[in-house]
Image (tube, one colour):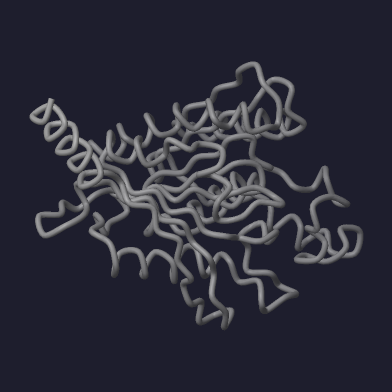
Length: 270
């Protein structure tokens, strides 16, 4: 009995010693002159004296969310991090849509995500500090933010994804505080045209990014995702596109992120 107890205690200690670490950080944004909360999930192989460099997947939350949204939707992210040898980084983007707002200098989340945050993570964690080891995805507003940042910063991100993303914001001019960042749609149509993901495709060539797009069949963003898919087909840009039963909710995202992680895991291992 004593021997069995010792074995159990050892196994418990081993499990605790070799498990992903979840950090909740406040990272300084010089461009916004404020601290931004960020949750980082680090696999066991990227920890300790013999740490191995691991790829990083940035996960962006949706409207009304925060840095803890993804760990709430997917509580087993630490286990997945260990299984895949992948670092997950989840920043708090407020309700910014992850742009540098042309109206609000305190909302420069494109600069934060694609420059300041990446530099911090590469400087403080054992990462593969290269676009081949760096991808970004997100849900809803975060799907827009992921594609927006990746397309505009192809030197930083090698892969981009979106699940239930707002790929064209213009059909929703009164929603989700977007006018706070861009101005009223009727008076600022050119600004809105320039800040919607679907119009960024013109600057994309086949092979620039590994792209995955998915959306639920009952989602109010289904049409804009289908439109993006067709635009990519017209430009002959390779991408994965999936629709499946589901709505704009946590149940759908809990399932869909599994497929996205598999997609990026394959990309990282090329």
